[in-house]
Image (cartoon, rainbow, N blue to C red; front, side, top):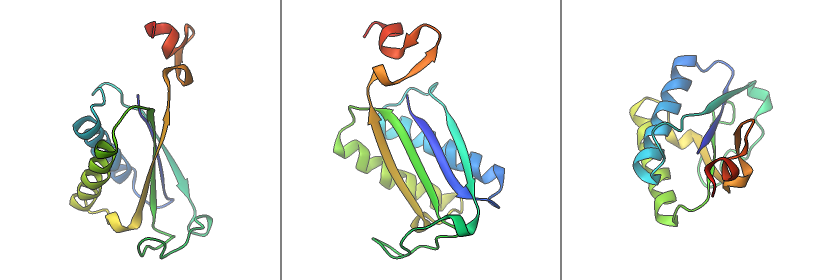
Length: 129
């Protein structure tokens, strides 16, 4: 159950944001066994002066054009799956014309008790996990 959050420059076209998330979802399905129906994303836009990050930490990037991909998902993926996700997603970004060197990705893992999609309660309760 990933929930993707894309932090992008204010002027990045909506179509590009959708393309990034489409590629991210496909990458999650291919590398991490995510259900194809688990498709959730929020685009958060920032002004260039609002991105404060070190421009050369573990790579060179332009803070005013950096995209940050935040992925919240259920715990349980192996380190190999996570590494595959990062490699695959960077390749996908480059293919759609978004410089992967100007991106930061991170995962936030949690449990079924940490999600709720209905009035029935947590995913753990609804699915009887």
